[in-house]
Image (tube, rainbow, N blue to C red; front, side):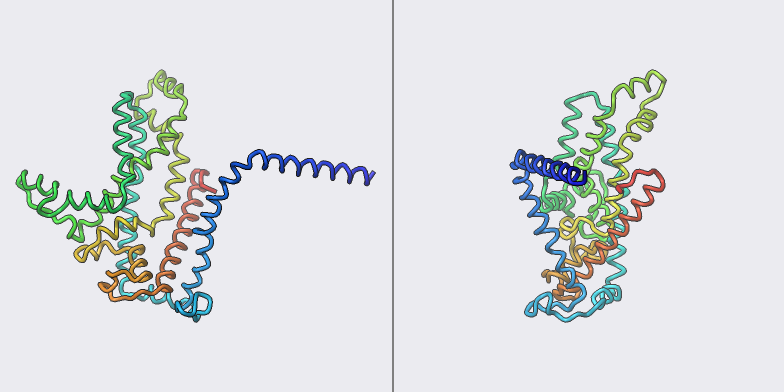
Length: 326
């Protein structure tokens, strides 16, 4: 009996293996296509993890990563004790929170408005106009902002002059930089971020709204109890991901908008890492030289804080609504 049972198990296992092999062969074209993104992720996302050890070393290019002397947490201590630490952290957190408050709800509002718009051409025109800026590169975006907000020739200041108002130095004022940066970011990404909410709202059964109208619900009540209820899991997931990037920021836009006049409010962790880690020409303005180990340590600190914030917000979301990411 044991021999028969073992033979049956072997046959079943062999049949399962054959079935799996046949499935792979039948879908071999898809698996071949999968090789490309798999190799890309391995090369650009996993292989560079080896370089994290530079954060704990005094990296010497001639000696290589592994043979450079260990310094422990010295590079982290340098950053925490740096005179720029408080200012950089403040700017990063302020810009990220401002961006979150201003930019996170707007795509949701835009998606709901477009979902309830019954003029097809107007709906598509608005969706196209709001989605198009996402495809502009950071250089083109900053170029447009510079042309619009220039002190003497910018369109905004020309309008102010025609109204008898004084000129505003948008690009050369430290106090104005957060507003310029955040609303430029919102303008570029609002339409793109709204797409995921629009697709979720498209799956809502129209009979829900019809039943709500019959029961006497007005537009705001339908939005609150139907639309927002349907996209609430997506909102929570997007919020968790946004909180994980609280120390990130848009490096390209921030760096291109920086100048000596607004550096006090525009210097964030990402731009500082670029300057100290890669030895940008502007690094002389902050009195540092290229230091790969120092830049790696700051970047590692930024990523670790992002992971911790993501886990914390996810746990809070699970405790409050039970709809966290994991």
